[in-house]
Image (tube, rainbow, N blue to C red; front, side, top):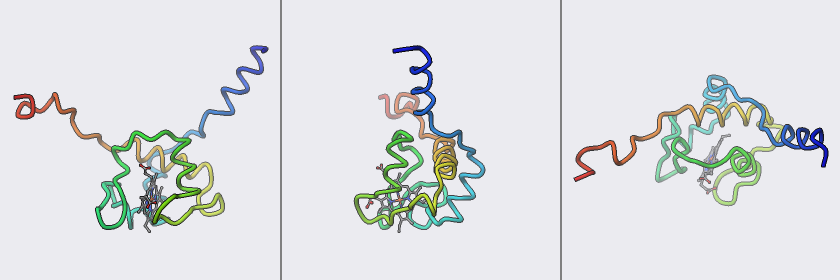
Length: 108
Ligand code: HEC
């Protein structure tokens, strides 16, 4: 395979660059927060936490397009590819919980 083709393939798989600030606005505007919480912290009653969720961008997008459970689907008309990338960037930007090893009480 030529190097050119390889580069093309790599580019095709790179998700659009997301903007976390725009993503936060969209998360509120589109209404994801209603079920997942303002900080995407989740709620046992309405939706799982999304903030410390290690899912990949590909899985994220395919999930919001075709959810498997209670969640309503978001087509590209409602959430464009770029907006999905922004929301993903917002979720990635949220603080992660400290690692267990960094909490002295839990190390004992
Ligand atoms: C009506 C409530 C509701 C709304 C609104 C909603 N979700 Fe969800 N979401 C859920 C529930 C409940 C689940 C758990 C699985 C299921 O039942 O679909 C979920 C699961 C997910 C998952 C999968 C998490 C995983 O670990 O696999 C992602 C990603 C997600 N939601 C993102 C979003 C985004 C982004 C939005 C806004 C565009 C949104 N959700 C709006 C209820 C909602």
